[in-house]
Image 1 (tube, rainbow, N blue to C red):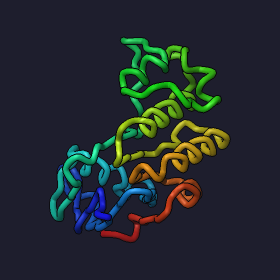
Image 2: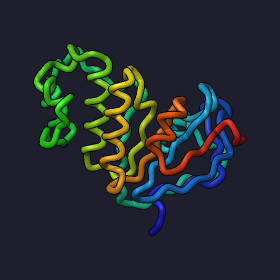
Image 3: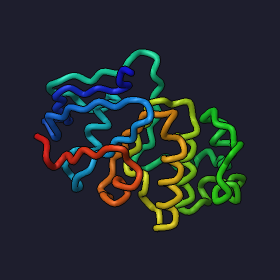
Length: 189
């Protein structure tokens, strides 16, 4: 099967190159972890895939028709437009059916009243339950205590077969737990 994402010697950054060259392929059923310390360019590489950072060299290929979903490092917490978790999922086009019990308890609360961990888990679940086939997760364990990190790992694993997932994290143990492969960006460029 053809990959849903291919990077060929990509060098990316903003005003100047920050990361690369990086080459990788990612296909359905795979969870690829981008590891490395803070500042190595993990999030910048995701931004390049999204078209939000400059590609100085190399190529990024994604087949037409493959839908993209993205969990940013700091998911938006709407304050001016207070939505419940259920309403927010509806905006995303995701039904609340099958919501894990740890999220079902707070789904009807306003999102601006959820704890940071509850908000992060709901945002992660919304991305994973959505229509995206190529999923980019930037630091999905931010704001999560160890129990919630475990729940995040379960959510990623439960939907692995339907997606090609790229996970950025500085938490190497989490990446080893959820990923089918790891790429350490500290060893590139």
